[in-house]
Image: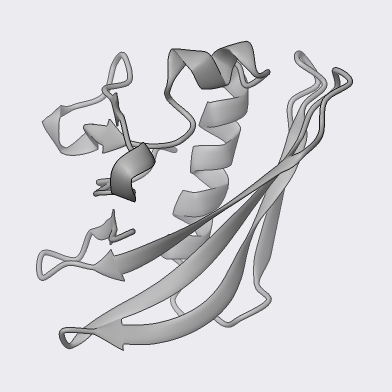
Length: 128
């Protein structure tokens, strides 16, 4: 299970084209930067995080508070993705997701918040 299209994440954004994904899977993500990997996320962590997001985005009905947890026994890292709020932008259904990441190594956890909107073709894209 892999995610649909990611979009823009502001000035801190950078590009990740994950191996094995088609053109529609080109990503901009705070989780794909090699510097982030140095902070503790490995590919397996990102795959699990992306799968959690995909599950939330593809639920028939989504509500604030909905949450998906992930844990990678190989790295010891874990986290969750939760719905913060629902909104509409330019007529498109949207929601904010909070990504909470905890590291096995002694480093502080991190939280990222991204806004997702559904495109006309039915895929979900990060708006900011």
